[in-house]
Length: 330
Image (cartoon, rainbow, N blue to C red; front, side):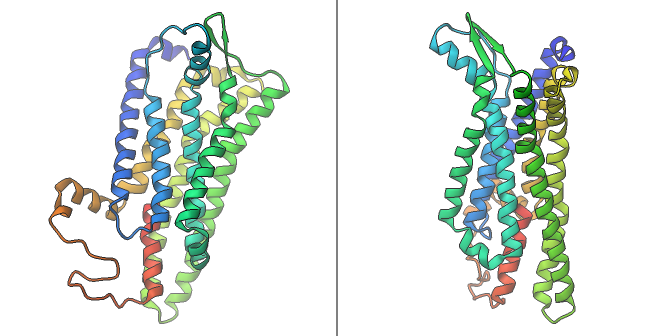
């Protein structure tokens, strides 16, 4: 950490720039998602929840000035909640678990589209997201005990011995390894399923459905694995060095803590670009919002043409096309 101690100004400038990028990007995702008509409300809830977690992580990642710790209960609370970065780590974890939930929702939407309609209703989506945020709070509550308040001084105190090793293993598995495995397995099965369905449909006469699956597969290949790979790469330095630290290898985490957390936070910045800005529908909606064209042109109801005529597309084709559009937005 010596490099950053000697270059604190440069470090804070980098944090500010990344935080502003994360705030603006995720805020735009939240605003634009509300305007995209083809996307089902359930999918909007999950993407919005993910963007909110990344947005709040960006807000709390800003380098706020730290003054003297006040005495009494106020200093105790400030030490354990603010100086410990417990709030920031809470939103980091919430972003990870939201990413897993989005993955599972997309998995059921593509592989089990009929069951998806009953399993992922609006009410169940709201309930699952509420439970996710509450469970994340419970799982991350231990961070408030890492900082100790002694005689007006806030001191970071890690557990010792076996407790530290167990804590390191728990954090590595619950916040990195297990989510990464779940996402990789889910996306691998989605890709395999789409390839098989696409191959069988191209051999038949269902050209419209096959075409929809081709588009879906392209979006999956380009974005879903990108999301998982970026998560794995950007958070790997932090989780690996922290795990080594808990096993007694002191230098990697203590010396590079500021750097690896900075790299991990980049995941909250790139998510909006992967989910939104790389998607043509997102860019079109954003452009319409900026130019205020949406206020001048009449909206077109889903399933109807601009002339008001009912779209006669086969319902199965329509449903698969909808899933393809949603997949591209994740």
